[in-house]
Image (cartoon, rainbow, N blue to C red; front, top):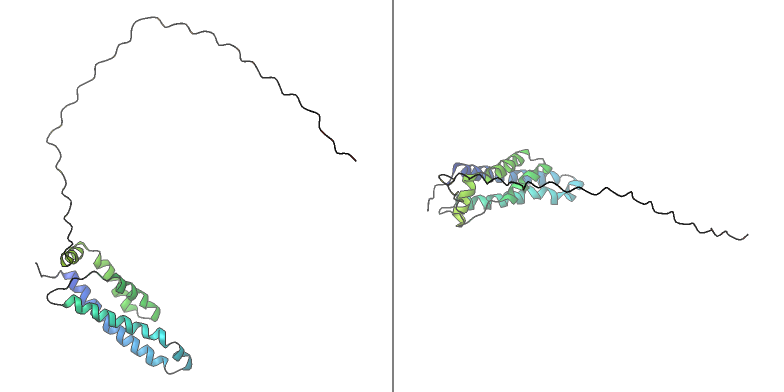
Length: 174
């Protein structure tokens, strides 16, 4: 098996590694800042989310960098959570998530993941066009018999239907 990793695959791995480290520090800084105020203490669950994302990113990166390569799927979930991290103010992680989704859709990266998983689908082979097609022969012309057309009968005037008779209306008693 070809163990050479494509360049975009390596770029995804390095970007995810840096984003994971940034998310860890971002989460720790946000949690530390939140502990200063009483309202911040109530918001601790929200400030821990970047830290959790950073841990998942680092676990995924360890699988990406492993030698020999592990069976692995593109992690679009992590990329989507990186984009959603803009809600915590982390614009860098959002940019990494967008780039990761774009790179996951690259043909070379898709083929590499397919080779890792053993699910490489062969490209459909197009069938060649036939060398030459036979020339169509013209159809023989159809000749109508030379008999005079019959005279059509004159149209009869249509009868107009008689109007229906109206029944007298019932009146309400007073």
